[in-house]
Image 1 (cartoon, rainbow, N blue to C red):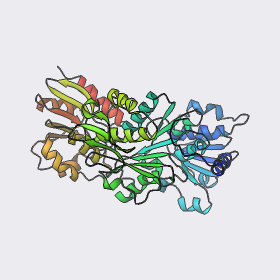
Image 2: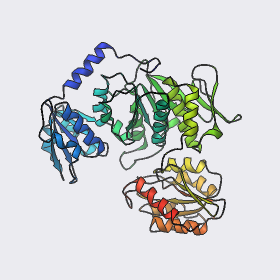
Image 3: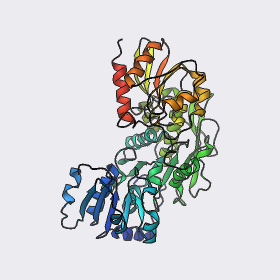
Image 4: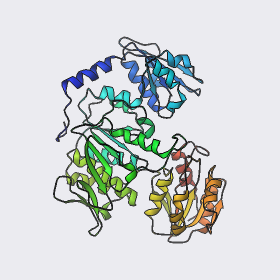
Length: 476
């Protein structure tokens, strides 16, 4: 077990979780959505003896991982499929519904389901019911930007300390796949979509990195999006920790039950991790007296947003009992993740940076804030009902040329119609070609779209790879 003051599960609480876990056996559970989380949830439920129906609006190939459950077996349930459409009777005849994060709750007949007292839960809620009977504490990390980087970094630091660590959730591996492992820690990236349908999910440590407007094509307003993020703290209690960005008022929930730990670039928190600008150091006062963790120049990940990600990871791993030396070593070797301010290549003195994961306005702001050289910015894609006006000051200050592509290009162009160098293109290859033609030595070409990718690409990874291929194809 990790050597720090973990909340011990009370016997009565443990009995409740065991009883809830047993309540799936023989029950009809409908899993809505056959993405990675839906497939993992179906497999977990079938292993626990549930009669599972997986439904998806689109026709899909049945994953091989679910083949063993198609006929059932001794001690196991079965998995059936209804793909290419959704029947309301399938939902209304269920004992439980597990909703995949990509499926909006509003798309279900919620009132009729509530009238029949059919619980609607998320995959992370399902997983947490089974994980609650294990000893590994859950660390939940959410926020508009920086989730994946911080989650990965926390995992790397803990693994470097010799612990067995599960890293997943929204990051890639569904939380349900953590149920069968003998973990010391479970580190989960969580989206607002996953938090919408939690009920009992209780992380030992929950970190909220920031909140800026995003997904307003799914939420009626910014407050609704905030409230979804704040839910990560709602089941915490005595002995739990809430790690918060002191510099972001929008990320401060109205109430907290766990102990508040802060990180800040701008001020010294009462208890937490902060940036000492004068000395160029990240410092912790978590345990009382200030202690230097690492010099900023030693970090391989650059930019103001990555300073915040690093400070959040430091706060979390200090709470987990990691030594300062172990944290320092991991931070100094961590190179970041693909598609997140990823240096691609330097051509004739021009640096090309892939920030395809910058899918909202807040992410673009953070990326531009961390750059000092003139920027040729490639932006645009599928709009998420975003307001691009908060970008005006930074773009007029730092962006020499603005190149727009995708469905949102006209909307963005209207906001920046008075920019001295704005152009529209029809493809990523053309965007890179035009950027290269106008860039001069010492400048930066930055892909930071501020939009989703689904109008032209499979996902943000595909968009980033196309950008990198175009950059690699430039003559040197």
